Image (cartoon, rainbow, N blue to C red; front, side):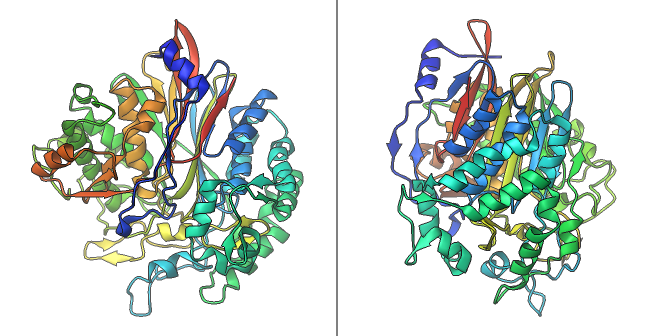
Length: 591
């Protein structure tokens, strides 16, 4: 366990913060969820249980459930329902999610990813001539809406691991929807920035007044969502997937004036959440478990760590809070190799097989050592996809949009059970379609817009009933010797999620940082293109050193939203230590 000084504990308990200006964004690479500032956070410590979430009201809801004796799953459900209300740009019951759960004995991966309608084809995001449609055409409207998966997944997890009644978990969100919540500065900025949401009459009436977003601090009530949540609390997930709510979703998707979609009542009624085996691999003294396909996160992070395991990352710790040049070089080269495989092979394995022996082939230690041998003194720029053991398939290269509006939740309960939940509506405010108090996702844009290239069919092409590839990376880490939970972490950030989570794992597991310190590190990485650096966080000397090693640099606002909880030791006593990303408004809360 990580040791923490009394001074750090005092700072954590105080929750000291400082406000600094948001860095300017590279206009060509602005995240759909824009940067809204940077607030220093010291982290939070608790003895019994803890929840870390992207909004204080959501964290408070999870905390209240834990105080009542609820399980980690119970608290995670309460947090998700409140996030639907207070962080609608990022997640909600109209979207999808992946959840990793540890019950003290086993790790499970719950798949609540959206699915494509039965009427969808691989031409869904193509013009008549076969060329991809524009980004706006893909994202905004009914075309991009997949069957929401969050509630079916949460219900499945609750049936296995819930302690409190399902209905009780809805009470915090219903109360907030009825009585109202103060519009946060972050949500206000997102609403002001977005140019599409106000075109939906329902959303415009709720979020805006005279064409402008309600001011910061304005009390927003959502009686429509309160009614929806009461129906689901009383009737279970069936109340969402069968009946009036489903009919209204289908009608909304089909009636978009310029970009209708193909979702049907049968698509919604037939949705099933899936329990899948996690992707677990050893990294130094730890076992790291992540999400399997259709998420690419678990495999990609296992690949990055397996590649980095061949090098001594501990020998290159950060100096003055900034990673060393050698660490940046090794990390971004490992990312290039992992993303090369991701972009070629990762997809919904219910439809498309992985190469060779599947997941084991892609995270095979000898294969990753071969990949690591490609890393030299100079950046490779663009890495080739590898040839895993037993490979018998060839796929084209993906070109999905992969936007960044997502949220992450971590919970550890009094029994030691843990949840790492990444939840999303895809782009900021999803498809910009509001129904019954919540927003619909645009997750189908996570499919490749092209269906074939010179190498063959693209693994992540649209197919009926298929789940689009994701980068969401809910992760749980264990000590290899004791098998005890060490930490849980995850982040929003679109395809950059993999880099954000891997950065935090290297920070904690290699460099001995606590969770908050690791989250606070500048963001960096590569998606098998330029080396990406968070704007304003890297000194010119480091940038020049990277260029001298062949790195092409791109700086922009890398608006991660990392949330994590870590087991620490203070004077020989076990504590939980929670971290929240300074780039967003999240907090951790516990006893």
